[in-house]
Image 1 (tube, rainbow, N blue to C red):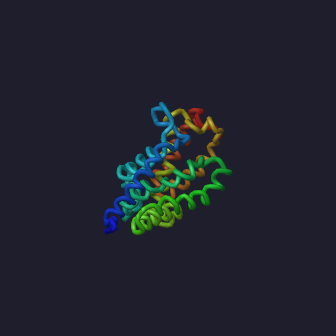
Image 2: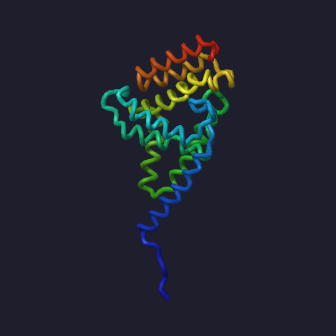
Length: 203
């Protein structure tokens, strides 16, 4: 009796499909931020799509020579770890302290589902984003921080009053935006000051 085997290319495809099914779970991770129309909270998959698109639209505000294709790829994978680790509220010090270890474990499992060459590539993108040592990573992180500020400003403070976030805490996050894009950092700071003036963000 002959043994039926799976061709290597078919096995690779099955592995890729299993990963595709797994990352669909990102759609069920609900973030604190609301959509800009205020109708509901966004999920992490929507956030990843949004900031990836912002990288293309706002790419002229990146440092000269920035590889925008790499930035988009980085932003598409940067939050896949939330499938296991969940969304971290950046103004909660307890959650933030636990985040690195939880997300590293998640990265090991999730990127490990892929064929080794693709898993290594995506893990490299994720590690680069977290380290923020390249212009691409700093610009990607800037957009990741810029999007919630934009949303909160256009939803009368959004999560800021809800979670008693102060202006000084938000200004601290703006510094991360400035590191990746001075012009977007300046714009974000203007939004913060406008929100304070309108009473949507407390000093």
